[in-house]
View 1 (cartoon, rainbow, N blue to C red):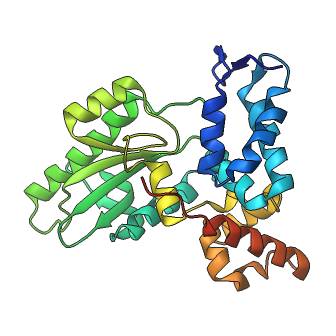
View 2: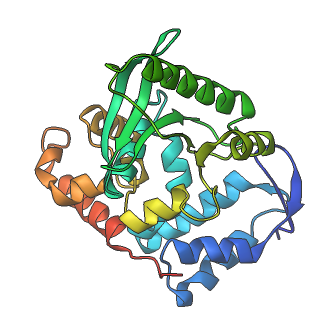
Length: 281
């Protein structure tokens, strides 16, 4: 029976049943079914890895309901948006779209010293924001202070040019650094001091990546458990980043999955994923 777990960074810590219960609840699993999942996980050998715990939970959840398994899979699903970062940039842009911003992805903007390809420009009538995205395709990698310094330097170079050139046309109020993992303590300290905003897996404590995924039902297409990696890659290449897109426009799947029965299965899972509404805090 499991008593300790081995984390992705090699550290050993005591198995926290309450943490697993909380994550299952957040995925939408009904209380009466949580006990059986916990029992199966607890039967793993002592010092099992967090990946082994995750795999066992996913296996059990898929037998119960694929939509819940997919929501539980959200962190890993974000890693699979790679290996390049462009799908992640489109994913982050959609968060801003849902918040009422107009977005542009991959724009070139002149700076005072050099031109910059900016990941996302997000604007409203009152705000013009730059968003720098840092994508990681594996767990255990944090976004460090060097990335925050880089984002701030680019922002300042663009702003300096805007101040010098009245025809520049791009005046930005702030810079946000977005990542699919966590930030180091040094990065957070620098950001708070230098005025760099962060959007990460669990930071800030409110209005973080998990919060917006749940609030707007922005589950990435890589959350699906009914298709393999190749089909997920084909979907991303076709510009389909979100399960919501499939749920609302199922005809987009016809050129990728030709079997009608399989298409219906995938669409049903996508709709099930998006149907869950987390409890308001």
